[in-house]
Image: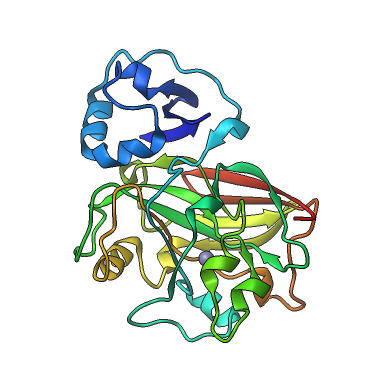
Length: 281
Ligand code: ZN
């Protein structure tokens, strides 16, 4: 199953078209895309058996919002691919990766313009993003609590991120528009192997990152266990799972996003994000 946020309303994506959930379910589920995660089991049971769905409508991807627009928590994981830890100059984490927040005001849909902070060094990080479908606290490693998977960009302004006596990842990664998510949420059953998906990104058609999620140091089930060992993961939370090698910070010479750049990010079996950079924010 694929669900999306079309102009602020929850839709099912069926054969590339959008079916409005509130109307199809005759009011049983709210139009608010965020509300569905609190009733995820009930919703998936309905969707699995819903017959005579109304005909879907064509849509413009620019009208999609994030399939998870207002999570209570957004946890982002650093250094979760060995090649990226190496290019960043850090040891590979063994018991617990670094974890930081991306603040929810940075979340946008999949096709956006991003204003680059003036004087900043804005970098790209394509990531597999997990949406939580049921409360997980001290959970075993498993896919049980995962509602679905989507694509995210963990855009990062490196000067802010690394300023101060201790790095403050959350602020540098939470400028407006720095958390594009989408284009839709895909349930784990849609994948042959949800633990092995290609992901990557390009700038103006030039490949910057290309990796596979089988190379995650902490897999999705492992992250559910590690994070929920400390705090409860709540329905509708997001986890940015980390980025493979190829970010601008790790290049020689270093490279940053510039006004006019088009950043396209993808995860196999899900879809793509498209960010156009503008200057002067
Ligand atoms: Zn990241």
